Length: 270
Ligand SMILES: Nc1ncnc2c1ncn2[C@@H]1O[C@H](COP(=O)(O)OP(=O)(O)OP(=O)(O)O)[C@@H](O)[C@H]1O
Ligand SMILES: [Mg+2]
Image 1 (cartoon, helix red, strand yellow):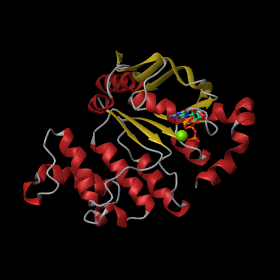
Image 2: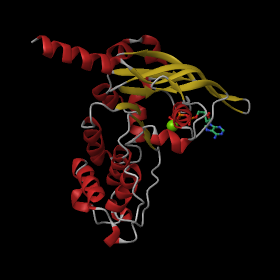
Image 3: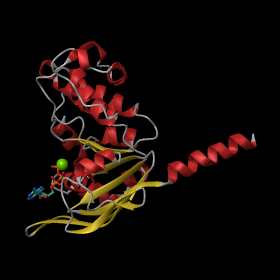
Image 4: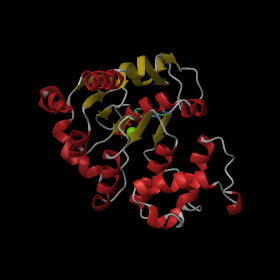
């Protein structure tokens, strides 16, 4: 019993630890202040949603976390270590993976090949996608396993271009998970996906390994309130509110600036 309790406490401690943090994170584009003074913490194993009106600075914030953009001021810390000056590719190696608001896949390659490449890179194997005989079985096995998890096993040999858009977004998710990230940043993962297919993506997100800290940008409030344990609201580049889904839903100011329109927004992005 005592051992079990100690184990539970240890897991609790890991889960409350901060994986990713920003301090005073700010980004200007000329005169426009897209992101300003963001102090943010993403806990290990987090299920955290970032919401807010169009143009609030959500994607810019993610771009600052991944190193696509450099901040004008402020810092980004991963596991307590300052990575503000760390290049994008290096941050991926440190365990920050993402998906994009618009997908970036190798459309002419098969689904399996698209997932093979990042898994091979992570394992330190030179990807040999044009030489089937040179493919490593351990890489293929892991790539296939990821495809099974995301229910893409049946289309492994299909070209990405042959897949419906919803399933293409699942391939992106497989690639991101294939990097075995500690932090996964999802920028509107169901954007552009017909609503009849969006449940596939949401189901997959709900089944992500528990130890990955997930930050999701999402306009559909049903998804946000089902998935997230914590919600941050951004407005005009700054954090407007943060709390549990219940607290955010009950916050009259948030309702006034954003949630009042959320039904329409979910429709916009479906
Ligand atoms: N590369 C850029 N150059 C100039 N302005 C930019 C650039 N990227 C973003 N912006 C501006 O910064 C602001 C924040 O944009 P951002 O894309 O981060 O918003 P968002 O919250 O992701 O919006 P959406 O919900 O529509 O995706 C907007 O006014 C946008 O026009
Ligand atoms: Mg955006």
